[in-house]
Amino acid sequence: MDITTIKKLSNQKKLIPFLGAGFSLPLGLPSWESLIRNLAPSLGWDPDVFMQSGNNNYLQLAEYYISKKSKGELRNEISKGMAIDPLKLSASLAHKYLVELKPNSIYTTNYDEGIEQAFQLYGQKYNVIRNKFCRFYYHFYI
Image 1 (spheres, rainbow, N blue to C red):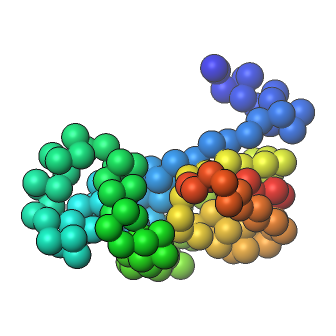
Image 2 (cartoon, rainbow, N blue to C red; image 1 turned 30 degrees about the vertical axis):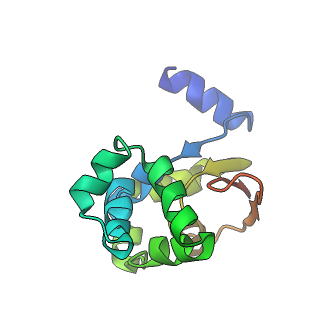
């Protein structure tokens, strides 16, 4: 899709960004791989062996963690180290441009609150709707 089409869809409020964990990497937040590797020691696994045991399938390894611990403990582990540096957020052009895009909705798999904090930083109102049936997704209405 070319930039002209993207602009046209955006102007018509028909563009819905889908943002994965890579969107937060410029904020200094950990990648999915880092998060999953960090789960290994609490399960008594070496991180390299843990990753190989799940064929580097992050969701499968997260499910394994839940089966041995709990969803709450997984959420707590993922939340560690998710604090966002306000200076990095204000320097993130991706976050700034996302807010300027003013989409009607955003879908994201992110656990961090960088998107919400960007909308707050630039004075834009939003509502977050999380879907309890789909573990990693929430709908972001603006």
